Image 1 (cartoon, helix red, strand yellow):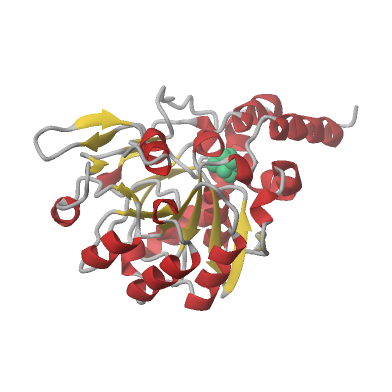
Image 2: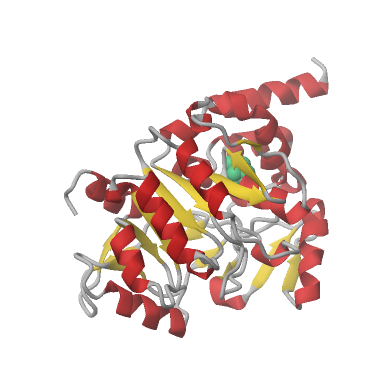
Length: 328
Ligand code: SF4
């Protein structure tokens, strides 16, 4: 068999094991790439994007309308979504377009001055101040008055995103790992704004690669795009997954270390961040990388629930399920 054909088969075998957007509990809408933190190995590759952007309000409404009928959580994320210059209007549109409060999600590290409107608008929160003192203060204040408050306590380990699987493994192992990718199995599809245009991706990290490279391989955000089977996203899977570091699950850095690890395939992206004086570490060819046993971003399983001083560990997906079924 020709090498390209064999590789095609391996890709299709991997895709057969991957989740489609309609099977996911959450779909994300990235409304901004602005953030007050600069975490190591950020899944949004924020330090590698050249320009700041905020999703336009018209595009946000269109994005929400495209998700009509989606039964899960629609999560507004960024960057830090609370830094969108029209965050109150974003909340208003969210309320108009998504009648069920329990479907409206907000993922943030610091709510700034928007606590009151955020509480009115959203029914699901993923609060992660990443151990940052200002964020912890903001989130602690925000949680007052929320029934059964919960947040991510402490710092998080972030495995590298820019260590391409194709630089580390042979084709077979690479596609086997992609088939089991933590993000595909547990996280979300996403909608972003790319050069003013709305674009959808089967994977939130795939969208980050496009934005960091200033390219556009997203699909048009038409009503019901999320009902497509992952097989229909094969061009995105082929383009993004072999160059992505998530399935390798390598040892990375703690969020606050502000350090990214990369391999040759992604040197173009990593080097861009030097302008911002980012710390970057190249994984040399042939290195035997340290691997991790836990999920690629080590916090999503460990939410702290309960009032200050009485935290209890719960999972994000359990918490969302309880909200959707009215058991929160
Ligand atoms: S782009 Fe990366 S994170 Fe997304 S499904 Fe592919 S391998 Fe996983």
